[in-house]
Image (cartoon, rainbow, N blue to C red; front, side):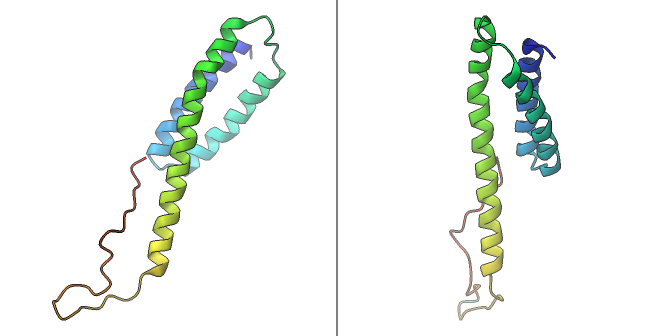
Length: 113
């Protein structure tokens, strides 16, 4: 795989990864991580010194790398918040007003990544 091909594949993988994260498809995200590692190995072994275009192309991918990292962090935090909310839930009881006494009004769990 040439340097240019590796950069093209990395760009495609980042887009696939973003879609998998948004779809909450952890199996696909893990499969993409393995392929990304292979492509990154090619990029590590490549000679970059004479290829300014490749350097600029890689730099243009950095925002996508960061965005996917942020999406993964949000997904992780949302999952953690959900687990915490579920493990802290107590049996539902009703107060004098008829409302749930353990109503979790105000608890936010975002899974829209």
